[in-house]
Amino acid sequence: MATFKVVITDYEYKSLSIEKDVLNQLDVEFVTAQCRTEEEVIAAAEDADGILNQYAPITEKVIQRLKHCKIISRYGVGVNTIDLNAATNRGIIVGNCTDYCVDEVADHALALLLASARKVTLLNSYVKQGTWDYKKSIPIYRLRGRVLGLVGFGKIPQNLSLKAKALGLHILACDPFVSEEAASPYGVQLVDLQTLCRESDFISVHAPLTEGDRGLIGKEQFHAMKPEAVVINTSRASLIDEAELIDALQASRIAGAALDVLEQEPILPGNPLLEMEQVILNPHVAWYSEESEKELKQKVAQNIVDVLSGYYPVYLANPEVKSTVRLMEQPK
Image 1 (cartoon, one colour):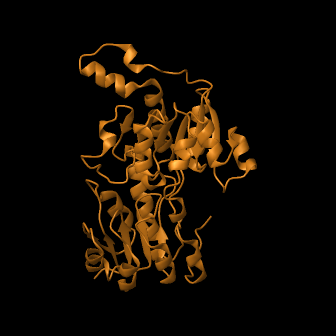
Image 2 (cartoon, rainbow, N blue to C red):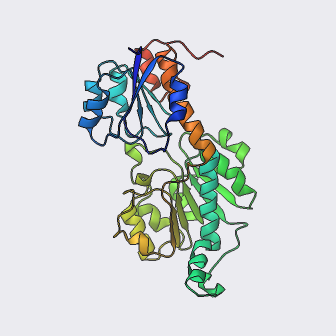
């Protein structure tokens, strides 16, 4: 009988060989499932020592039923599938991976910005329909000298800011947790959200999702934007009030949107965004490259190995748990 049991609640990857290779550092029974409900998670993971999680709900109800769990590690930066407070109260460490796709998401946001600015996907569609006419793109504005507003200024928007500055964009950022001193090396001007919305030609959303930030970009913000503004989201869909976004687009209060994330994924067939030629839609792909997927798998599995070996993980999403769970720090 194996020393530890690790359960993966759900996954959408073709192979789990990377996770298995990492977990094989220990004597582990590795169990896979495709859970969609609380009851399915409980049935699969009730007696697990460690859990790997993608989208399945790890709610307070689930956490209360976990008998031996020491670590829940989630594929990704966000941990919105997991009740952090409930896990912390039960002395369960929650791990994630905060740095596996910094370049990928920054590059994708920039790609969406450029595609919107030069109307690449719109013109591609017209040409494939038999229309060869540059005037279908009017108006296009010169990129140099335009303003990019970054909502949030963590690792990804910092990375994006350096790339965007090389194109001649002026960068604004809104982040209450970032100081002028921290922003200064990037040549970024910190402003409040309304100023950012009012002055930016492109608004790229990169804030983490908290309950207080749901609908952060809503009616008031859309009314403040320029009519030529384009909203880009490669972060969390709920940061933007989708109904207000649709209303702003339909009323031509803003010029367009480029969205890698949506409130309902996959997008529902009747969503008005599907019919808007000024909107670019992608299937939540900004995080992806062959390299980033491999890195993510290795790091979230290593979180479990670390904890089951008696160490705090490198990626600790609920540091408050240290007050009740005594483990060793990572060796320097």
